Amino acid sequence: MTGRTALRSEPPEGADIEEIERDLDYTREQLGETVEELTDRLAEKSRPLVYVAGATMAVAAAAAICVVAWRRRH
Image (tube, rainbow, N blue to C red):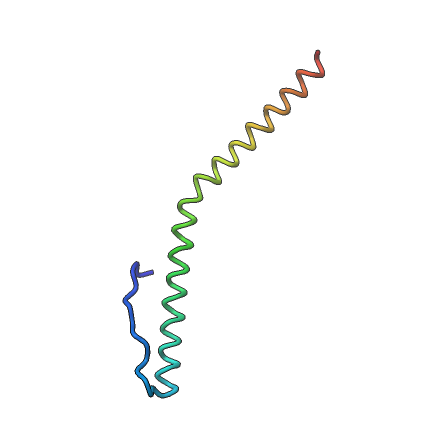
């Protein structure tokens, strides 16, 4: 991942098939790098949310167990 990618213009008008294919390959490569970078950024930002969600579920489960235990005694 290189961070920001350089902009590249389209192949010139009248470009041959090989130039167009090279341009398509380059575009696919850049798109893949961009998607990978965005995925990494999203994963970094969502990690704390996943932790909080897991902790919330654990607290909710513990509270439910406490309520059930309390009701059985009373």
